[in-house]
Structure formats: C-alpha cells, structure tokens
Length: 430
Image (cartoon, rainbow, N blue to C red; front, side, top):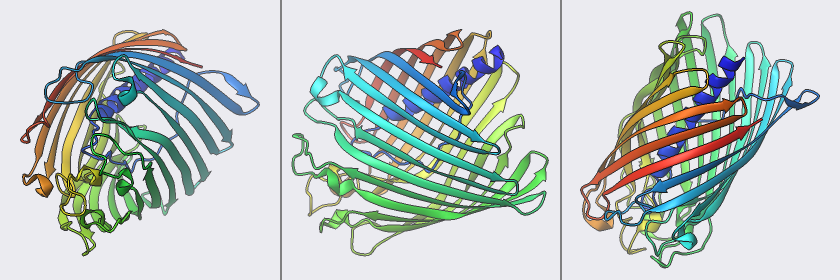
C-alpha cells in the first residue's frame, strides 16, 4: 500500500511539473492554446467517505522565485510568488460505472507588481464513465475562470471564462476491433477590460467557439498494442468585430495514423500523426494551411524505480487578435497563426518509498507563418531544463524542491528572454 501511494504521489508531482512548465510559457502575444485532452479519472489515496461517496480534500502551498516575472528581454524584474491551491474531489463508484467531480483554485500573489500579477483562478471538472461491457460512454465538462498573464509592468491580466464539454462513445466490435466517436465543444469569453498598455485592443476580439468531432478506429494486433486511424473535423467560430483580422472562422480536417499501448503494458500511451488542413473563411486576411501534425504522450516504466515520460506535438495555434497594433487596418502583430513543434522528456527515479527525483528537458519551436503588422516573420526557439526532488513525509503530506531554467531565443527584438525559477511546494491530500 505504501508503495502504491508513494508511486501515485510521484506521478502527481511529475504531472504538476509538466503543467507548471507549460504555464510558464504563456504570454499575451501567444493566445493560450486549448488542449483537446479530456480529464480522466484519478486513483487517489485517502479514506474519507460517506457511504460509497469518496471525499478527497487537499491543499498545496508553493513558494517560488522567478528572475523574470514578465518574460522580457532585460530580465531585470524578478519576484517571489506565493501560490495557494486548495481543492476537493468527490468520487462515486456505481458498480461498473463511475462519477467524479472536483474543484480547485490557484491563488497567486507576487511580492512585487501586485496590481499587474496577482490573481485567483478557479476550476471545476466533472466526468461520468458508463461501462456496459462492449459499450462505454465517457462524458463530462471542464469549466475555468482564468486569465492571461501581463507582459510588462504597465500591462494587466486579461480575465476570461472557458468551458469545454466532451463526450466519447466507444464500442468493441470484436476481440481486436474498437470504434470510438468523440465530440468536444469549447468556448472562451474575455472581459472587456482594456489594458493601459494598449487601450485600443479589445480582449473580446479573442472570444471563440470551437466544435471538434470525429472517429477513431482501433485494431489490436498484439495483446496490449493497437494501431489506430483517426479522422477529425473542427469548426472554429471567432467573434467578428467587422475588422479585417477578426474574421478568422475556419474549418480543419485531420487524417491521422498511430499506435496505442494499453495501461497494463510496460509502455503506456498514444502517438498519432498525419495530414492536417485548415481552411479559413474568405472574408479575412488569413491564409489556408496544410501539412504534417502530430501528438504523442508515452510513459515507459523501465524498472519499478525508473520511469520515462515523453510528450511531443506539432500543431497549428492561433495568435491573439488583441496584439494588433493597428486594429482594423493591419492583421495581428505576427499574423493569424503559427506552427508549434516540440516536446518534453522527463525521467523519474524512486530512491526509496518516500524520496523521488525528477529531471526534465524541453524544446519548442514556434514558427509564425505570416509577417503581420510587424512586417517580419517571427520564429522562436525555446529550451528549458529542470530538476526537482520529492519527499513524501507521510501518505498525506509531501514536500518538493525544484529548479528550472528557460531560454527563449527569438529573431524579433524584444521577444527573447531567459528565466531562472526556484520553487518549493508543501502539499497535503486526504
């Protein structure tokens, strides 16, 4: 039991580190992408329950120091940051079925630049899994109240509400075949509260509604390995304010091949990729794009003490309309979209039941496909590496120390930056 709980906490720390790494790369110049990944059910420690209902409260406190709070080129504005993250998860198993709902918050306060940086974000996630042997239904909703970070000391956060509903229906045709139909609906709505850094830019220009649907066909050719074919269609509806660069409605198609390894195998996860095409409506400045895209998330358990995790992707992401310096006349500062390619390799080693170490390295390339109003095609190469240690003091109490270095090299003046980040986290979960 101690081994299982310690391993679960180690994996949780790994996931936290990856999420923290990704969140630090966000900036207002690059609108935060919305992942198509859905929340999955979690195996949590703890023994608080009311009848069949399991209750898992928890809280973590992170004290960190960043040498570059706004991710700017001069990297002279460092600050201590305190993050308090309370939460609670409710789980209700019903025979072969399962229902889970959780709430958590991130309350962030910086020692400097309070007005620009401080915020509180809230997240509510629900998931329902219905298992009828051959037929399974996975449905749920992810809601969040969040914000984009400021880019300098006179900027502000841009608050938004986001909701994502999803449904997967799978049917096992025979011992080797399975077909899955999926649907996602995602919307994001910003407040009309304008930054003094650029009061002409309305955050609501970045509002959107996106519908993604498609089908996966799996064929199992080894006991724990399947080949898959995926077709997906995505319609993205962006708020049109009557300006040239706000007419960004698009239809996308993807035709992907890949492999999936089931959880009981030594290697677990999915990798898939292939042809991707996006067609924009003719009324705007956006040009169509087609090419190779992929995504992969693999975990390899080398031994009972050593685990490797590899995540990679190549995808097309939208830039932020509000970054246009001349609204209504020129397109966005760096065009409509960019291709983002990269990945993260993470290694976790369990020294004892209570002590684990994590090392990770990441590389990302953001290639902006249009010049936009800057009259220059931007390209960023971003490297990051970090190390952290986890000490599981008790089953319900853990402590982590970590360091991460990030170097973003851009061909556009003012967009390069470096950051040193130190952090310590104390977490309690029941």
